[in-house]
Image (tube, rainbow, N blue to C red; front, side, top):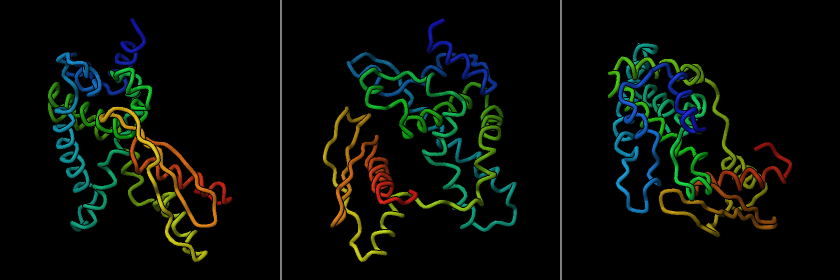
Length: 232
């Protein structure tokens, strides 16, 4: 058994479901970069579309159960925390999905396998595969098992991200808002890699890269904060 096949077997063991249709799981784990040369390989984009809807249903279902007195605004806020690419990416890492992914070598080189977006999309695709292979109850069991910590953290104070902290730090010194400039963009359209430079008058610019502009901006802000001897 090769390394990836072992990772797929371990993934099924972690999620507690042995697929009766292994091809369904394989499709859920296949990134759109595979087969870009023209071969007709089915990737996980359509499953991601379905999985997003299944995930939203299950999150809304459990939220209304655990917060029977919550108003719509509170429920919407909680939904935004439970259903987003960062949350899905955390779940992907917890279940070992990263090593089970099928990603083109060029996309892997530019960090696709570690991208929150790629991992989050794959998590939604796996959710759809579970739903199609085992029904809604199978998908529900997966959701309620691997979103436990996310529900526990719903009321935890949310720390500010590096961009917000850097802006507050600059304003406190009478400086304008930090300026973020794209200085380089590489990689294919399905897995871009951005290099962002953050600039503040009177300070050396700092540069960082990421799989999206937002990721790169946060990394650049964190680097500038670190060099200003602040906690990002």
